[in-house]
Structures are given as C-alpha cells and as structure tokens.
Image (tube, rainbow, N blue to C red; front, side, top):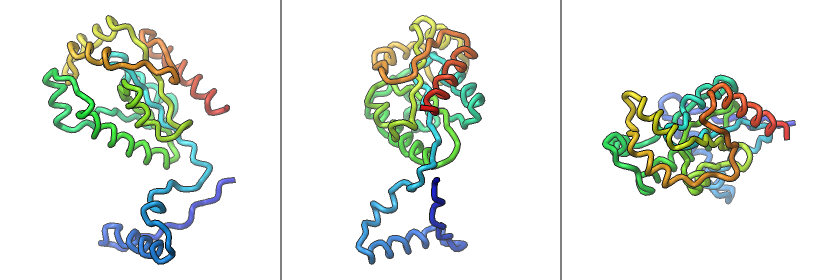
Length: 215
C-alpha cells in the first residue's frame, strides 16, 4: 500500500512560494543533509503509475494525428513537442533550414524537465515528438518503464505526400530528407506501420500498452 506523502508547507500570500522552500533549505542544512539532493528527489510513493507515451517518427508519419487519437482513447493529455521549441528554432524550420544538434539541445532539455514533472502526476501523457536519434530518446527516457516510445514507421514516399498536402505548417516537405538521414530507428520501441488507417494504429498501440501495464 502506498503511504500518503507528508503534508506540504503552504506559502503565505505574497511570498511567491519561496518562504517554505527557504525554510526547508535551512532545516536540511541544520540537520547536515544536502538541500540540493533532498529538494530534487522524487516523492517516495510507490503508487505513481503515470506513463508518458512518446509517439515518435519523422515528419509526415502522423505523430500529431495518432497522438491525439491515442490520448483520447487512453483518457490522457496530449502534448506536441513542437511547443517546446525556441522561437529561433521555429523560424529556422519555417525558412527550410534543418536543425542541428546544438539547436535541439535546449529543446530536449525542456522536454526532459517536462517529462520529470508529468511522471510525478497521476494521469498519462501522450507526447508527439520526433525523437529521431538514440541520444534524443535517451535524454527523454526519464524512467526505465514509465516512458514508452511508440515508433510510427512510414515509407518516405507516404510521408512526403502527407507533407505536400499540409497547409500552414512550419515544416517544409523538402526538409524530410534531412530527417530521414538523422533517423536512427529504435529497437526497443512499440513499432507500428504508420501507413495503416489511424484507427488501426491506435488500436494496436492501445493493446500493446495494456499488455505492458499488466506485466
């Protein structure tokens, strides 16, 4: 049985929430504990079971469409990783300039921090995110079993046709080649054929995820 966490100290009105934090730091220092270690330690509640499902793949694979439908099927929250890009990154992609690893670094850092927060909550999150390289996925795998990658494997011609049919999207179809070159297909993800109908893809993922929860 999971024990309830200790009551939290409440901030007084107008202190911005800093007073309780400062009191905890002083108390830990007086006890000889490390404030930084204590304040960054996740709650010791074994009943945290929220999952973060990262729907990954190249542009045109259907990450947003599948992710939104999967979130609805699971009763989860949907988040698009594009929301975490800096304005400079969005401007580069809108201009048809592919991102390099230096451009992606702050984006990955922000996503990793967000995943840490979601894992401390009770509801699942479905995150649509390219996560093309193994190093990207390693940065986002903030828990060994509760962060799951679902890889939408799609033929290049299907992805290109979908991109050409888009309207008012910052990602240009001629940037697909750079993503395909960057892609390092995962060998530890739930892999589905993304050229199938969306309902079929979602049903496969729901079944895979249900099996994971019971093992």
